[in-house]
Length: 236
Image 1 (tube, rainbow, N blue to C red):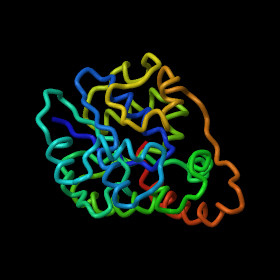
Image 2 (cartoon, helix red, strand yellow):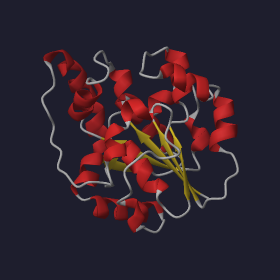
Image 3 (spheres, rainbow, N blue to C red):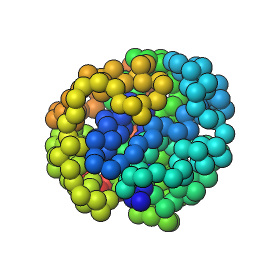
Image 4 (tube, rainbow, N blue to C red):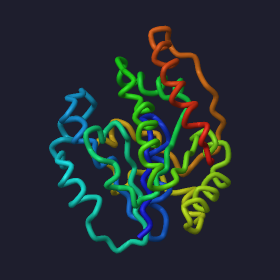
């Protein structure tokens, strides 16, 4: 089985990427398997946190055995993950999967995140954790680094390139789908996935960095350091 491990910060196009892979012929997807573990460990007040912790396992051993490494009949497995959710968990346990780091300009992440949760920190953006995990996982498997702005600028070119780097065939079904929820959506989808549910695929658009409020400027400057580090390894 081909394993694809997407590691993204929040407020990126990671959910759309999960939808793209879910519409392949033989690909199972898992939506943020360590989210309940993260919420229980940090006690972050995210929308729907109680529901997440009620329905999802928060024990890493159960997550690995019951979710990630369970037997499945598909040819591919795509995991949408966030590196800060895995603090305290050894990511090398997933080193047989191809790591794909999805990055986005931090100003866009901050502007989007703070519409839902105004008080955020570096941990919430996960870019520092992305760098730490990149440096760790590269010893076992050459990571793929994708800037979401490049995907949005030309979705077909970007997805074709990603499939080539993953050594899987590109499928047109990855580019468009019917609006609505995905069966594999996490229980938190109603709080975060409205735009994806209203979409009909990877829509072409151009993104540019935006101005953030003055109180977020120090956060932006620190996050840019990590973003530019990962961008230096960009493959798409």
